[in-house]
Amino acid sequence: MKYTLALLQHTCGLSFEAGTVITVSEDAEADIRISELFLEKYCSHSFDWREYFKEEAVIKCEDGRPDYLSSAFYMISCLQEYDNNARDAFGRFPYEASYQKHYAVAGKNLVNKYFDALIKEIQTRHRVSRREPRSSRIVLTHDIDSLFGSFPQDWLATLKQGNAKGFISLLTALLTNPKTKSVWNTIEDILQIEEQFGFTSVFFWLPVKGKSTLDPAIKNADYRIGSAQIRELMQKIKSRGSVNGLHKSASHFSFSEEFEKLPEGLYEKINRYHFLRFNIQNDFPVLSHNVTQDYSLGFAEEPGFRNCFSLPYHPYDILNDRPFNFVEVPLNIMDRTLRNYKKFSPSRAQELILQFLESYKNDAVISILWHNQFFTPYKFKGWKSVYISILQYCRDHNIRSIGPEEIQKEYSINFDSF
View (spheres, rainbow, N blue to C red):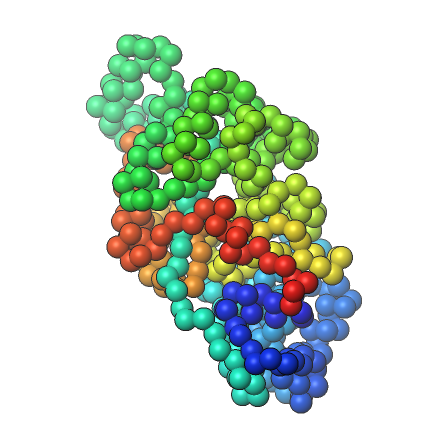
């Protein structure tokens, strides 16, 4: 529990009187009491959420009192995903199998709520102060999956929509310049929009091209990472103050092999898995040896918190009983979640996102993924405006962007100091 207390102290800015020792045990006289049930299940490596949460998403002590510390640890560490064979068609842990779905809490920052309750418990016995609430920050990210997929997708979309003007526009562009196939190359447009609002972002690039060798239903990049065009785009991103990272492909290539494919000097050792296709139990240890930060922890099907926690953090290596070396920046909102899974219109998606931001104006780092295709006016008509509305809201409410360098400085923790 030292790990969870260290997170509590660091994220909430707690300060104690000199010599203060916080006791944690199942003993009723402890400063923080933890559940015997939790200790039993955790030590036996039994992690099914149904064994921990009985009537609501909180672990209870034997006398019925909430065990906030164990509950926070269970959620932050994503214990429900360990030794869980539930997988969707792409090999991902599905929202349908989660306690978030069962208790309808994906959109709730329960860990911070439990941290607040823990602070109140500690304050009944010790003098402790905490940092004042501060404005939230936003992490803007873009996965560059496809630059040349406009044909046939945009063309078919214009026909289905009865958008003759759009179809003629696409046809004219192709006839005028047959090499003009990269309608989805919106990198300059994205940079300009973000600069207007004073924001920067992170672009994740796929170094492997073509169909996945692991899953034929998944396509990797439709561009060649070593081309002069991609190098120029990545150089432009870096020169404008934004950051390039790795979009780990669905392939047999290792992290070191994929990083070697990226243009030297133009990227940071950060990652997001393509299709969010990863397994916490197997892949977090790999990440810990290869990256400083990962941005993959989110449900593809549902916006919100996959670990019910609103801040970047070091995940916990339960098999080796220590924190991992990398910082996880959880993903909260993705365009494809709202369009493809929830089937929302742009206006409905905008309403939900702004409500989410309104709910977490303080003490949160909200990560948003907007693909480059969603800035185009054909198949993805209306979604560019949703992104602009997000930036407008954030600027109006003093929610500024935060990038990998600042995240590393603020959320990388030396746990040995606690």
